Length: 317
Image (cartoon, rainbow, N blue to C red; front, side):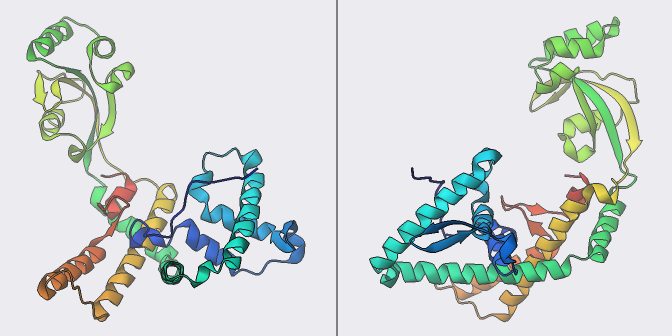
């Protein structure tokens, strides 16, 4: 029985910052590590060619996203079956001289360049990701958010002003806010009594924040209109925000420092390189390159192309 996985292309990854942490890179690095024979048993042979435990581990790294939903109990057998098919088909391709085609040569050259880049960026990122560098990022981000005010509030969301006014009257007569929210609010959080938890001004739409941050704890607002409808807001608590402990955000900071170092390294190489864009005027291409360099220094971008700032590592978006 042939085991197949979702197709993995040797095309572009999702941006330079993410390249250094892909499974492909992990596989290449793993391949360079010495493995003792007793720790690396032969699991199968295909026409005399051995498939070892290290081959399965490398394939698991490369196929990571495809294996995410697979039952751990059968994953190893499925990966081994895939490798057996891989060896068989690859040998057939060699017999047919597929590697001599121009398309294959181009793909092979591209894959080689990509893996070289992956490996180098991994080295640069790892070298930059020291405890000192991570703590510096943490301290800078902590200064930006420590002392910032945040509010814990509930709200009831309805579609019309008349509905909001009717609810406000019920609350004035002593109705329980949380119970009314459960019964009448259109917000997804209605089942929790309209509880929004703690938030900063920037995390809510301006109309909502303007009222929530002026109310005293225990007070209830008049109807407030926003793009989502009409709100009745109750402030439960206010406090000065504190940064989380370093250990709580260490993993995110490590990723940030690594990716930023990689982005800065690429920007530095780009500045030193002679890049000619034939599809754009030289001046426009130069402006684009310089803009990319400035952006790399300011922060790194996530997979969606949005700049991620250090303060977001501590929960501030």
